[in-house]
Amino acid sequence: MTKGTVFINSMLIDFQSENDLELYISNREQMMTTEVYERLEKAGLKRQVIAKVWNKDQHRLSVTFEYQTQEAFKEVEKIYEEVVSSSAFMKKFTIKYQNNRAVVLVDFVAQ
Image (tube, rainbow, N blue to C red; front, side):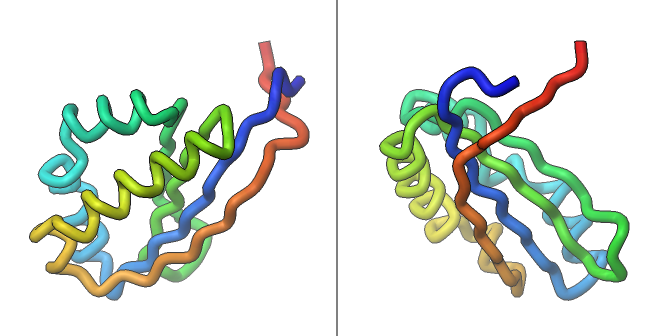
């Protein structure tokens, strides 16, 4: 079960078309480089999971960020917003974001 407090941000990203979604997936490393992930890790990002939502008739990704502390969340958020807002790649898309910030209460992992 849960070991220590974990803060998460579950982000839903909706695209206007399947083509936009696929273009984003295939080219996101233009924005999210190794150097960016190193900065995020240093700021306190523990994990990021990106999943393609398949049970809805939409063009959606689910992105989960995991942090050990609330302060880490704030620092990572600053870096992520800086990277996204300065990215020419991201300006190619009309995207709708929905963020849900939470504290993990139960985390079962099968052995």
